[in-house]
Length: 166
Image (cartoon, rainbow, N blue to C red; front, side, top):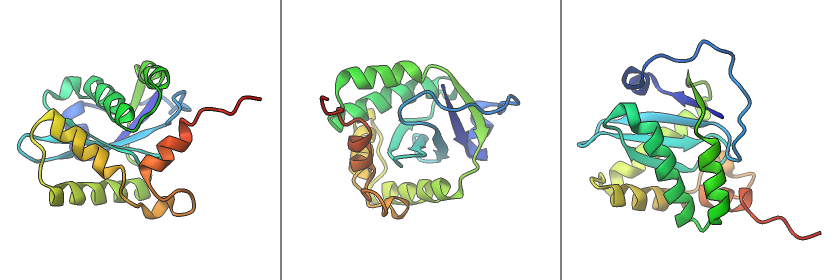
């Protein structure tokens, strides 16, 4: 279970937000933010609230974008050398979610930065291009992470680091 905080332009495609109280995430990565990028073809940009890891997914068809997001996240985590059992567990826990409007302006600002950087690197057209662009964006220094590692890929590595044997 996690909360997907979406911008209004993505909510217009996905439907209404939840009226239930928001829940604490049960996933290792926590909650996610997302927006629509009006490229050709259109793309959804997902950014993790804790690690600022960006994941790009084709938006159409919008009804299945969240299922495809989980698959794309698994591919990005594999690309970042996260152990497969941990990737599988995270994907399994992400089967349930709540949809809400964005609330964290810092993460929304980072979504804008990742969108700008993706535009500068060239708009990806294929799923393989989106994976490559997601992985390269994960190495971008992020101001909100400066007190920690400074980079989304390093935050993911620290989050999924194997615990030392006691």
